[in-house]
Amino acid sequence: LDANGKRIANELGRRDYVTGEMWKNKPPFRLCLNKAAAEEIIWHCKHYTGRGVMKYYDSGAALAADMGVPVSVLEETHESHYQAAKKTEKDPNG
Image 1 (cartoon, helix red, strand yellow):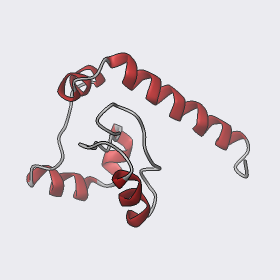
Image 2 (cartoon, rainbow, N blue to C red):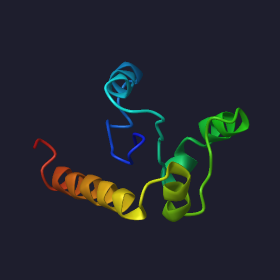
Image 3 (cartoon, one colour):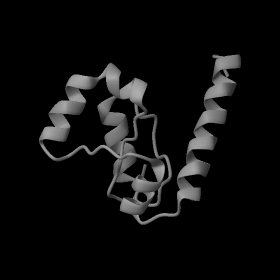
Image 4 (spheres, rainbow, N blue to C red):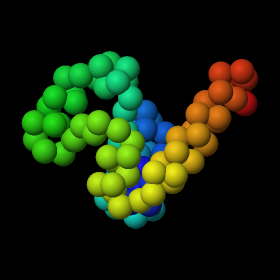
């Protein structure tokens, strides 16, 4: 997510792609993971949390408050991504 709470890239894309998208948008940036995704890369989460560049939030409201954006923006961003994922699920080739 960019500073405004909008999704800027496919988070699972190659590092050079994600970095390129970051350069086109407004920092600071946040990578939001649900519990299942975080558990899948738990070593990385522990590593980056320990270095102070990753943070756990109890809720979307807590994340929104830290970002200074309305919760509704994060809800809209999430819903948009969810709907796009559902379409891909139905037709992987677009």
